[in-house]
Image (cartoon, rainbow, N blue to C red; front, side):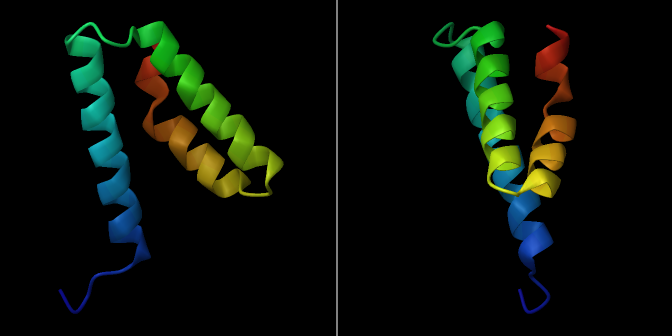
Length: 68
């Protein structure tokens, strides 16, 4: 644990969020199109708060939602 860093935390968080979204979709609680809208809104929010690097990372990581 001594070599844990912010990149590890970010990747772990993104994977956790992805698993949560996948579970919500599989349970028919949240459709893929709505998940894509949530991700787009998140990216837009990050971009408007000068966190465009984080926005690009989220957009890239969750690109599969936009394809649906």
